[in-house]
Length: 77
Ligand code: SF4
Image 1 (cartoon, rainbow, N blue to C red):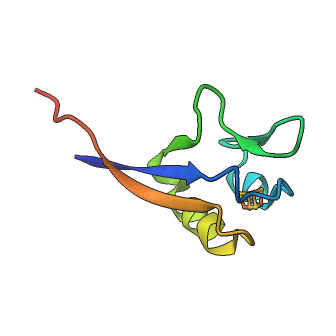
Image 2 (cartoon, rainbow, N blue to C red):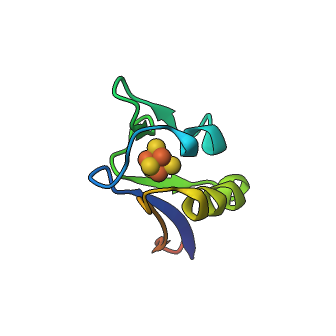
């Protein structure tokens, strides 16, 4: 089984927050404007209902600071 994870490269991000507009309430801006997800670091699990918006955010990020990755999850027994 796989799920999507959004990777945020804060070294490339300009902190203007386009992605937080597309992915709110999943992402919020921190005090400097950088996108953050509560309880996560630079890799944010994306629920299925947000995958299309996450793809838009990756495509529209002006600094190419976002990428979507497939992450394997252990099969349930
Ligand atoms: S859209 Fe890209 S550059 Fe803008 S805040 Fe989000 S990650 Fe940073």
